[in-house]
Amino acid sequence: MIRDIRVLVVDKDPYVRNWIALLVARDWRTHIAGEVGSINDLALFIKDKKPRVDVLILEAELAANDYSFKDFKEAISQLSHSPVILFWGLQPDGRVIKRLSQPNFKGYLLKDEIGNSLAWAAAIASGGDWVLTPSIQEALFRLDLALPGKGVVIDGRNLIAELTDREAEVARMAFIFSLDRHDLADELNISKDWSYGLVSSVYNKLGLDEILRGEVDPTAYLGSNELVLDHLRDIISQLKGSSKARDIETLAFHIFTMPEIETFHLNES
Figure 1 (tube, rainbow, N blue to C red):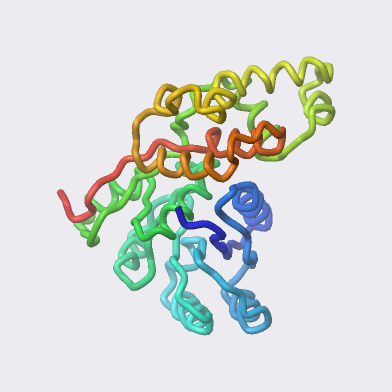
Figure 2: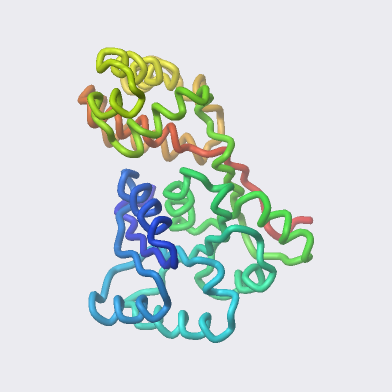
């Protein structure tokens, strides 16, 4: 698995940028290289910081306009090496989809469909695969557009970890926002002891202790998709069977945000 993936985010909405930065920073494989709100800010950031960027997440609306897209390509040409680029938007845009055939563009994600699984998409794209969410795949077929090679469809709405709504809310607070048990109890308006019990219940449902200790085949909890399992095995090997709370929470974050993934060939009809 590729590690130490540096991600740069370009999105007009500061809330969205902060959310992406949080997800990327929490993932063991990815780090934030920077976050900017416009193409002009991107050009200034690159000129000033000269960052290393492996994956660039670009708001699709900024790529739809020919002039801003031209400015975008000019800005990233100043980077020391060309990053993988993922479009990121609210709905499929045919103008943006047609840009996927250009060099270094490796995917298009819809915000509602990728959900909490954005770092998974960045990690997979950095390895060379195309990454799409379901509506983008459908739009490609509808527009009769073909892209070379192998890709994956990621659906972050269908997480591998089957949790109740209550358990998912606990997991989101504990694993994404890293709330300690006292703050978690305050957010849920429950006792601190009860918050420990809720998190422990989620750990058990994810099979964390058994997976870390090698006592169970991960497929028992997570299915048999080899791409997912390869990523998971690499994470587990880095943790080296650790029972430290921080390491267990790291594994919990990866399992909680692990999306449903389907591999397919983009030039197949």
